[in-house]
Amino acid sequence: MKIKKIVVSLFAVGMMASPLAYATNGMLMEGYGPISTGMGGASMAFDNGTAGMANNPATLGLMADGESRLDLAVGGLHPDIVSKMAGMPDANSGGTAYYMPAAGWVKKQGALTYGIGVFAQGGMGTEYTATDWVSAGAGPSRSEVGVGNLIVPVSYDVTPDFNIGGSLDLVWSGMDLQMAMSAPQMGALAASGNLTASGAGAAGLPFFLGGANNVGYFNFTDGSDFTGKASSTGWAGKLGMTYKVNKQLTVGATYHFKTSLGDMSASGAQMSMIDNGGTMGGPAGAVYTLTGDISIVNFQFPETYGIGMAVQATDELMVAVDYKRIGWANAMKEFHMTFTSTDMGGLSMDMKMPQNWEDQDVFNIGFAYKASPDLTLRAGANLANNPIPDNTVNPLFPAIIKNHYTLGAGYSMGKVSEINASLAYVPKVTVTAPAAAGGYSIDHSQLNWQLMYTHRF
Image (cartoon, rainbow, N blue to C red):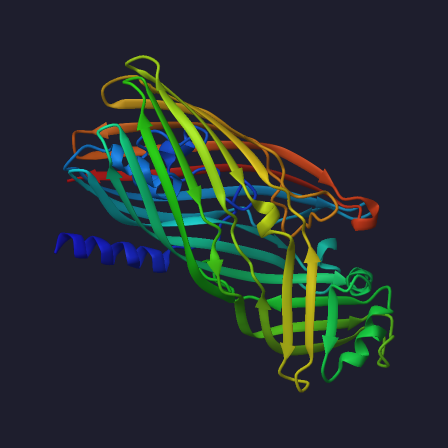
């Protein structure tokens, strides 16, 4: 009965947990769980709690035989984003706080370790007012993209020193978007074959695109911090291993499969064409709004592989070093959106915005120092490249962060209870799009934290 209650409770957390987060290695979190995050996101080769099912599932087998562990966590991501355009007041994103609950339960019986957990995998988020230049006078500009996982992991001790592990992940995604695009921007997509229209009313699109001051506006949002208007579900999985070379050195490796998500879709979406130039036959400033169905086509999170090692340098000090390769190039080639009107007999628009993200190299280094039998102090760094090319970066999707510097601590309250916390400082990164791509610049920095309570039984 205890196991059934834990499974039901974790499923309930998953239904309440917001996958809408602001991620920091591209769209992925810089680390999962405060033990790992306090050490710069290193996690491949040491016991980092139930968050191991989101990092390297084989590390779950490093816990003590007969132990059951329940982790309840919450995290806060606090981005500071400023988008700048010459001659315009700075646009400060109002999306400054994103909170994410997480939970995991794991039990080890002999050589077998198993469990269940819910974790936010990552996402993006920004909010600009209707008067910011980003919005072009069309309305508020906002993006919230999130992906979360319900994870079922298994780890097995092949030998006392060699563990293998894997997980099956139920994945869900959500998106809200309020996005303004100028007619010249949309016209450039049309000229390259990335914007097409068919059905009733399609003949009016060239007139709209011919107005230099005209603005298109896409709007689908449910106004919730916990869900997205457009949503989908799918599957993913992980494989991992750890090997104890000797008492001081453990090595680990993991592979995370690319997600297999269905297209995110929503009804009741709106597309507006604001005819500021009077090019569509009506008065200047006329607004033509269509309601219909929106789909985000083939939005996936990337495959990731990583290797690492943990060195017990002294009885008190452990040093962990990891390397991860995140396959953004295969997952973020374009942002593909379709809109089908229910107002005009099936007017259909197909738009592809090139993204051309680059694969990301992430280096994690962390230190854990046992200051007393009950207190562990942690520090680390997460060092990465910016995966987004300057010519495709967008103020609504500025996942340009590079490096993180982290601190953390863990405190045991007897044999049953434990608290762990982490804090990550993310220095400002500035990128500037070339003139042909808009000529704007974006500043982005963050301050993130995680807090976790552990109960063993």
